[in-house]
Length: 508
Image 1 (cartoon, rainbow, N blue to C red):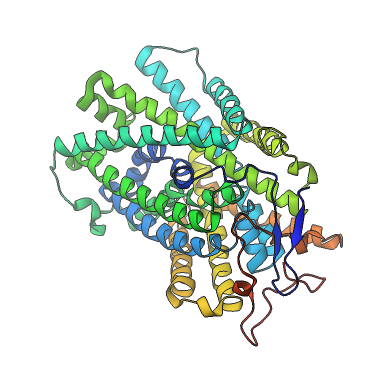
Image 2 (tube, helix red, strand yellow; image 1 turned 135 degrees about the vertical axis):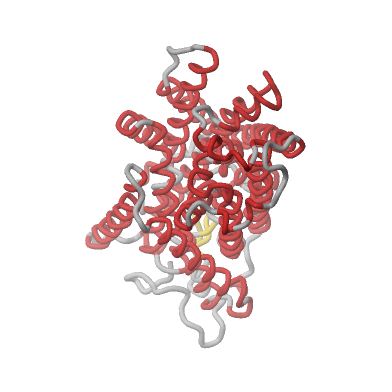
């Protein structure tokens, strides 16, 4: 276990040192951690056909509504990231601001996200790679599961060898994939198909159905998820209190501009008057458009998608393993997960656990449902689960500033934005699931609900043991190279305690 010092009863915060590689990441790799976790090429090339099948020509509007919601969520998250840097991410934030049990439940819901992200992405890319190799070059022996195994081995190697290698890799991959998709979108805009250039995509009345538009928003939110993956890298960042909030907001703004422009321009390039052929295209329509505009150079789009999958899997794995490490350090997960490589400074046992989960989930669901159906079903389930995680995080923002930083309380940042984004998440999730879609996508809400119920049972089981030393440590934050002055975390005169308190009566 890492050494740590206690901030004292007057601060209500445990400050820790870390065994991870400190000061390893500057602003650019922090931003690209968020950007590549969002996965630009995958989010555009592999999902725009699905979102268009739901929202029709207004699929760019789905991205726009999702962008607004995510922008509010990001603004709220920065308010915690700048004061509570920790590898635990949302686990630490909720443990510190609401209660350690709420932090554990939030982390449990999060387990449906980053720990499964490489599995579903690599499985889907394996399916996509297999079908593309077969249709384009007649290669029939390369199966999806072979791509999956090679990809898993590559991602494991990169994240095992150190955060700097991971960072350099995702920066390189991220720049390449964004450049390819943006250039293709420009070509589409300059060579519009039937329907010409118009803003019909941003008129809600042009949606196929209201339910389809909302379901498109839900999946578009899934396409935006990843901005929060910046937070778990706090202990490996330079000046995390300053860089993490910037990394979160910059990644959202970059991806917002990317999705809004590229989704619109690609539909323009195809032709908004013949979108049924876009939706029904047996071949990926973005590939079809690239072949039309670029000829043989379309293969760069294919490479950008492969590149994007590897980048997002590296970013997901970095985030998930740091959360495992942070939770284990507090005692809410097995202590073995705190083991750090003496040279590479990576949480090696957490990485092994991540690899096991990737293999189990990816191959298990892939062979059962099919890797493509696995991706879409889990995409909706993850988004619904994340809606709960983000909403709890919004509650933490309000409580933290109202209870502990009253002098800094801003009604917009700490009340209106969290409340508005929480309400929007709830409304969109409800509208997208009523009526419940057909299977297997229709199983998504039940998966998310099952994860929530199971998490409540686990929290109750842990609480019933009476062994809850982890409650006091769960909200520990990384001291880093710029510890906050004690005065910054003092209570306002007559203010309530920092949180509900555990059995010992101490703050989390």
